[in-house]
Image (tube, rainbow over all chains, first blue to last red; front, side, top):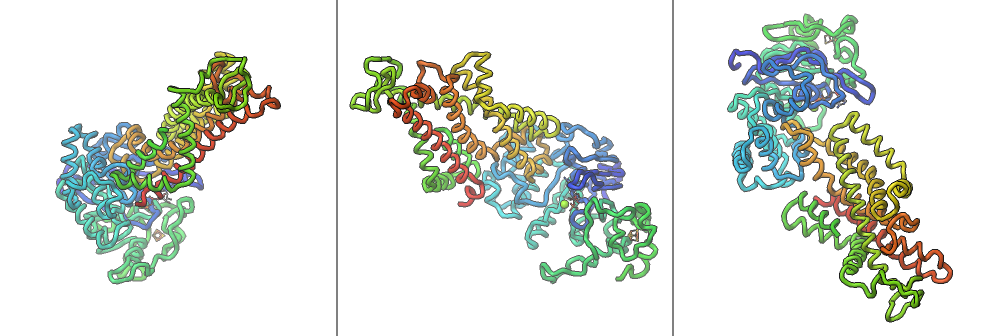
Length: 334
Length: 298
Ligand SMILES: Nc1ncnc2c1ncn2[C@@H]1O[C@H](COP(=O)(O)OP(=O)(O)O)[C@@H](O)[C@H]1O
Ligand code: SF4
Ligand SMILES: [Mg+2]
């Protein structure tokens, strides 16, 4: 952990209500965390659990129809309800984001140099020539081969991994304080995933940024962040330092996710042990504990109300009322 | 014609350098309806340009003594009821046709694309208002708005151009807003917003370039509709006023002599058909050629 100052970004009781095809639904509930400068936080959970919605809420890019509750503070300044014009000044400049699909995250009509230099010009007001030089330096730093020569090439002339390097350069152009990486390697070839994650880790350390890394892959989280939050059905079901969570998983969902993780050597596409049931649609989330429909040790009282967070260790919280059972030696069905 | 030029510029923007551009033309020359459409459209454009420097006779000189002549060496397609040379009338008429088309489509493009882009960028009640307004305008056919405008401003070329132009706006609003919304939903727009771009910049840098080819195709088709509307208005006496020749006007003049000299109606009819068919084929061809999925493969 870096310095002990006030949190850079502090989220309290964040909630997001979205209009879905089946009417309004609560996509995110009661998400709270604080991140100091230089800290890294992982957000893990199956597809559809609300990771991207949480990320988009932080950077202010949810559709206008989304209703955001709770509080998001950047160095003390409230971001919830901030007009878009003001948010615009933060995006790219103080908070930046890398997306999952490098194939579609770049505009096919503009050169990569233009796309990397653009945020620089707008946020820092440097000249076109300076911005271009800086773009080349950045592209070089993110490991794009022959950056100076290829700065005027178009996105389709690059591979997926190279494009993700370009989007990273784009996101880092203005030295943001907070970087949100939403499944930055999910769409990439396995062999390249590690390289990209290493690059991100290096850049985060080098620039003293705070990072929120989103992944559905526990392995990625284990290796890349200091603290983590496990999400299910729009709520954080377990959070703590990565070490603490991996040493003693408290929530039945985290334990299930761990058992279901693909292992080295397993062929791609083979379905391993999975958690019984499927991720519910937002509108079908059960009352009370969101995991109740898939939990092996569910009881009647689990459905009464959303369980409160139980501290099971120093800075390690679990949103489950039966941690006594789930965390008994060996855990559930281990 | 400016349409194919703009189109090639659009393709060049997708994939710069000489190769994709020549690729466009190579594919274009193999595309039958594009080639036929381009030839017919260029024919009309050529006629209009030629009329600026040369016509066999003056299209304005009335010579009742030599009225309704059959085709001859002097008058290739004969003369009309006022003794004017048909070929000259057709050539000058092409000029009116193109002028009306260009200005009317220009009005439609400027306002329609602008409003469509605003609707897509703003969403919410702004979008709602723009769409309802354009539905309202769309409910009045060009002829009807021309009649209403003519009642206020008097009939004439300016009136008909304005009416046709206004009539074009809603179509451009819809096409622009629909395709712009699709671009707004793309991930690179999200990435651009995450990098701090505002909606104006995103519209100019991301949305507009990516819908340009759709707009080019639509403009070509709207051009054909404008020509038809102009002919209809002139035929009704609401468009181009005498002595300015126009194809619709010629049809109107020919009407009274339909049994005596049917060819007088055929010539402008064929001219209108050539222009409309040519532009439609050109639009279809451009639609195929500018399809990004096809255009991007090299
Ligand atoms: N713009 C939206 N409108 C309505 N529902 C949405 C929207 N974006 C996401 N959702 C829904 O919210 C839930 C969480 O989505 P998301 O945050 O994208 O999941 P993930 O954890 O895979 O990133 C999903 O059920 C998804 O269908
Ligand atoms: S609260 Fe109940 S249903 Fe939810 S995870 Fe714990 S035991 Fe399972
Ligand atoms: Mg996601």
